Length: 188
Length: 289
Image (cartoon, rainbow over all chains, first blue to last red; front, side, top):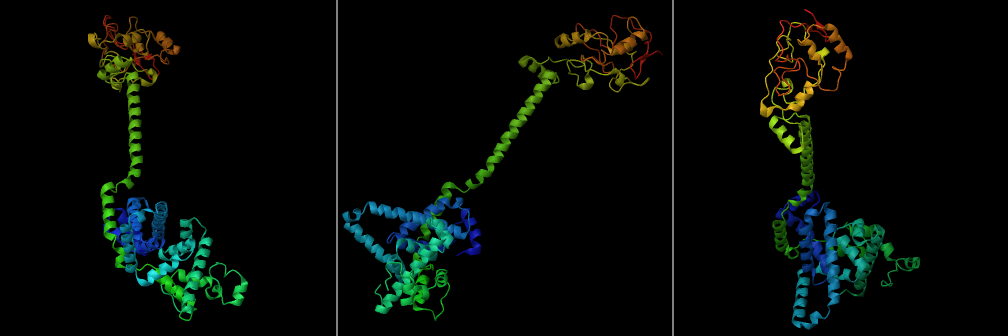
């Protein structure tokens, strides 16, 4: 988090300072990439690239603090992910027509997964097992660093509903984490 | 304990039979874990495992996650160079441009209105007045000095109405508005210059009848104080809305084919009297010397 330096950094980025833009990118990109990978496995890099392209186009129109900026960026990412999921749902057979492309895509996914730190990869895998609304709330709270109110605004829910969803998801994760320990561990 | 129905933490019977996640993971602890607060070492294993998982989810920038930075910065650079960043200052310019246009329009209206008023009044310089006369029938231009109002610019088509009672100079001193206020200095009228002669205003003045200045002039029948009183008492001459020439604002003889002398001057065909019959007073009456 840039915190106190964010307003000045944002102002310099809006005036065309590449270094300031790179600082914002380094601060937001890791969480953005994890959020995108968790919701669209194998397409995280493409989705974040589209998100940053849109951010650069609309950056001069943005006016707000750091939390507002993060909420804005993750709102764009969420829309891109929804578009990606819909697009994939409309053309599920395309990959089957090109087995070579399918193999290349799988290889890229595996490479991406191995590039992610093992603990993070396992955590993201566990979160993916949650119901979608709980997983999304937890990712936005933890990965994006947004609070209940910002997540509620992003998802169109009340802050109370966001709090309930996040707590239910965490309890379910706790249960998943403790059951394998009793059973002798998990192989993920 | 079933964790798939999502309601295992809702019923009190679950809490009684099992430790239950609510007891192990109260909401305060969950809120702290979500915010990244550390969990003490003696906490429940579920809380410790959950805190570790959330900690693993938290973004700690790694090199592989930032490999798209060069492409993003390049896109940022392209966007900068393509659009430029001057657009945000465009909205503040709009009021300024509008204000300039409004000011220009106002200045045009005021300026043109003033010129039009001056043209209608005949106060424009002679060349401009002639143009205005040709364009929209404004009063024609006057030659300098023929109307006896040089102190007002000399371009008024008609002499300005004056009050003889208030403008009478004190005896023996010249009027401030007339270089030749002494009635004995009757200017010799000169004929109008043909191209500058404008008979209409001269006719009006000539037909205006007895003027207040007549009391100062040596008329054909001089020294008639009762007549002067009658003229003043009539009041129509001094208070008439018809413009009348001031007897003290006639520095030069008028010109024109029909007006051979200044209203306050003596006609050229009249013999010059040896001495004026009187002098002006503040009341407008002639006082015999």
